[in-house]
Amino acid sequence: MELNVGLICAPELPETICRELIEPLSRYCQNHVDDKYEWTLDIMVDPLTGAVEDSKEIFNEASKIADQQNWDYTICVTDLLLFDKKKIILADLNKDLDIALLSLPAFGAPPMKNRTFKMIKQIVYELHNQDLSAARIKETATHQMKQKLRLSPIKRRKASISEETNVIRYSVVPKINGKVRAIFGMTYANRPWAVIASFKPIIAVAFATGAYTLIFPTLWELSIHYNLLRLVAITFVAITSMIIWMIVSHHLWEKRTKEGKAKMKKLYNTTTLITLTVAVLAYYIVLFAIFSIAIVFFVPPDLFESLTEIEKDVTLTSFLRLSWLATSIATLAGSIGASAESTELIRNIAYGYRQNRRYNEVKERNVQDDNN
Image (cartoon, rainbow, N blue to C red; front, side, top):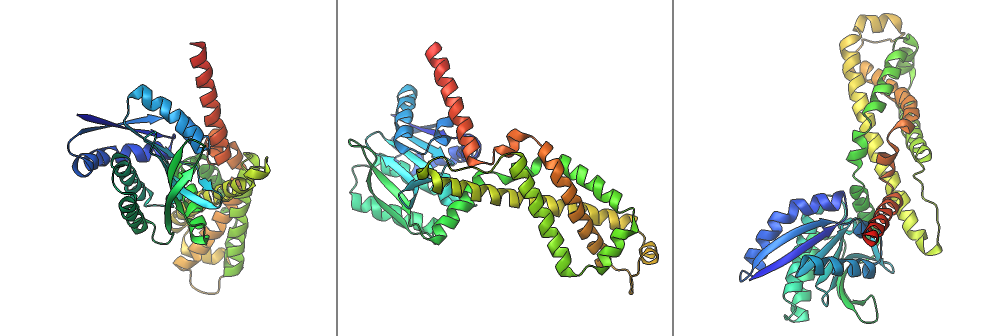
């Protein structure tokens, strides 16, 4: 006999994680859930799972897909943060439909994949063993998940998302650590490394600007006379200006549209801000490393000493202070070039933009299906 498990995942990070887990999950099902069956696992990418925050709507769509694909169990994986009032939802299990919904951001930053794998194993086990006592399943489930989320207590309870359907809901107690974990999880789901990869043209422009300013000894003099606090302040201004410019030029700040969505908009904007901060900091470090290598190799110590009023021997610290200042000046110039980057790529880190884009994809797909 054969049992089919389907994973319906949102594009980007959920799809990546699901594809990495498909083989170990298949082995787990075969060896630990029920070896009487031949387990097969399929993956389908559907933008709806990353476009709506309503469990009921996702369950309805997943039920249609499961019937078409002849799946016995279906697990939907989203990169949206789901709430039950003030509780952060880890997963919803609809035992009537044999469908579950899993929220990746609730698991926090890396190792997100390991935590997700643990939760999916629990979901499959629970869906397949519905005849076991509720107390036994609850005890096993909460113990296993606490091992992965030690700082955020997990609660498992029955929840109603409609008049006729009851679900089992795993939620995180909404204390500060749970919200912080969720924000880090949303930042990780934003894939800041994708934004960093798009900074190559900006680095080129910034380096060219910084290299030009290094021709003049004024910058060398300033690097000697500026104290540590002033250098830190210039760095802060440079990084902040680049982040603000990217938010403004690419319209990343999401405005409140409905009163009920105010909390989500605040979370989305916080996540966007943190994602950009991580990306710009990485950009700054790379640019600093490039300037440091260039200055150490191409600026002779005796020339540095003769063109400045340095009162001590030129050391590596002297060159690093110069590259630090040059990096900050170049970052200020590079922030203008940030507006010329791929709008689609930059905007994709904004949750609201991703949701709207995916929802439009679903609408277009439905229109095509109706026409066919």
